[in-house]
Structures are given as C-alpha cells and as structure tokens.
Image (cartoon, rainbow, N blue to C red; front, top):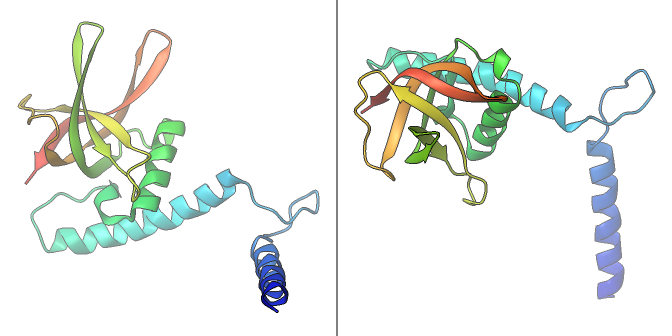
Length: 171
C-alpha cells in the first residue's frame, strides 16, 4: 500500500514538473528555456522591483538611490544578479550599485584589493565585488559593510575585473 501511494505521488510530481517546465515556443518547436533565459527574465523583474523598492526606501532616508540595490533582494536573487554583473559587465558599467556583506582584503601584484563578499542563504556560494573607496579609509577585514559605488571594469594583463569605484561605506 505504501509503495502504491509513493508511486502515485511520484507520478503526480513528475506530471507537475513536466507541465511547469514548458515555456514559450521557439523556432525549433522546443518548449524549454535555458538558464540564461530564466536569469534574463528574473533580472528584468529584479531591476524593476529593485528600482521601485530603492525609490521607496530612498524617499524615506538620506541614502542615494542605486540603479542596482542588492540590499533589497533575496539571497537567491542577489546570487543571480551578481552572476549577471560578472558575466555581462558591459550591461552594468556606469550604474550605481549598493551591496552589503563582509569586508575582505587580498594582496597581489604589489597591490591590496578590497571587496564586499556576499554569502548566499546556505553560505556555500560566496560572491563578491571589488571596490575602491573615495576616502581610502577601509574598515577591518570581516566587518559587515554596505557599499555604494559606480560599477566599472578594468584590465590587468589579459583579464578583465569588475569593481565599484568612487565607493563609500554607508552607515
């Protein structure tokens, strides 16, 4: 009896999952979406929601409005948005970004790099973005911070890196 109930439940879940995975038709007649399609759809929704939430929040405080406010997003959406920022940086150049996380420091190429590290809900997939403060007064490593700055990229050798320039740490 338990096996029959388990089989019925498994079949019902399979049918539900199959029907949920069908998307709009494309030229080949396939009804599936790629990961990029889903991320683009979520990003568009996120940017709209972030802008609205940021406007409401910033109307009530003295904080500057951010084009991309990662502090207003769930951990899943933050992960997706930061992934997009790193994989398609040209879409974000010149936009203002607000993010919060842990202050991190790394040394290399005779230089010190500072980043804001964001952990996801399970703390398994940390991501971060480098930042350069206007005043050069960096907090201690591990400090929880909220950083606001302008998204930019730069090259070192053959690699392109993302950073927030002219950044400030908000209280």
